[in-house]
Image 1 (cartoon, rainbow, N blue to C red):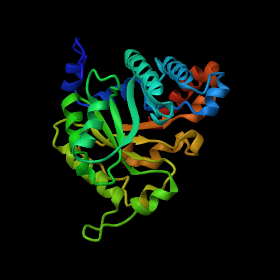
Image 2: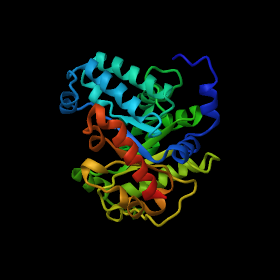
Image 3: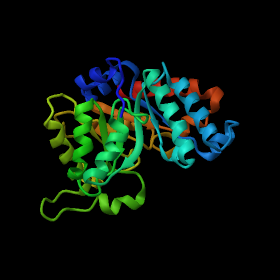
Image 4: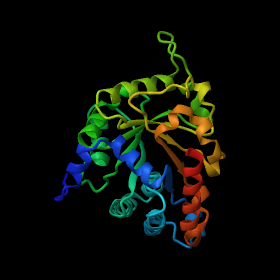
Amino acid sequence: MPTPNDGTAASEAATGFGVRLAAVIAESGSLCVGVDPHSYLLADWGLPDDAAGAREFGLRVVDASAGRAGIVKPQIAFFERFGSAGYAALEVVLAAARDAGLLVIGDVKRGDLGSTVEAYGEAWLTPGSSLEVDAMTASAFQGVGSLAAPIRLAAENGKGIFVLAATSNPEAARIQQAFDPDSGRTVARAIIEDVTRENALISDPIGPIGVVLGATVQLSDFGIDTGQHLEPALPVLAPGFGHQGAAVDDARTLYGELAEVLVLSESRSLLTAGPDGLADAIANRADAVRAALA
């Protein structure tokens, strides 16, 4: 895959993702704006339900986010549903987001093992790739060890990975709350501990590998201790605010010590403001998030 001809890739590789993420949070706050071109949102925005509509939607979200929030998170499924044209639209949106100085989390939720998961990592974490993002979400159903190849790529390229650990969908609880009879850990807790061990192999104070912890679940039900300080610090991607019901004002209480490097994600609750109201909605919510986590 091609690599940039400037110093951007080298600079990112030299500075770990966790450190870059913390710098973005310090400058622009913890709000992460979802880029989710649902069919009904495209209709509400007066856009066609096709790849061109998704492209225009994504570019408008990027434009509204720039200077008001520091992080965006395209949900890849809403582009992928349009096939190759959707991916072409996504490539334009990703390039625009990076050009705008936004940190981009690709919500791809990839997971497998061996050469297959390595290829997923190459697609999303390689500098110069048309699908390049700063971090990707991943599923460790086959264990955190199955993600060894993309974790290595992330470390080499200054990229990040957010591994699903405790998600808000109710059907996940049975697996994520299940106990390992040998260690006594829940699956969710094991993922956090395994990720923390991976982060400890890198000398940065904030690890490049984070976890996804939903804001609408009781984390203690998953065996997760929010009062424990982890070293290196653990990035947490926190969906579930806004439309799904979690309140921004409760973020510190919900995550405790795990709020040290928190990415607070909102999508539909912002996007329903429409193209004319989106910029103000993002600016107001970014201020509320800063106040809640101060």
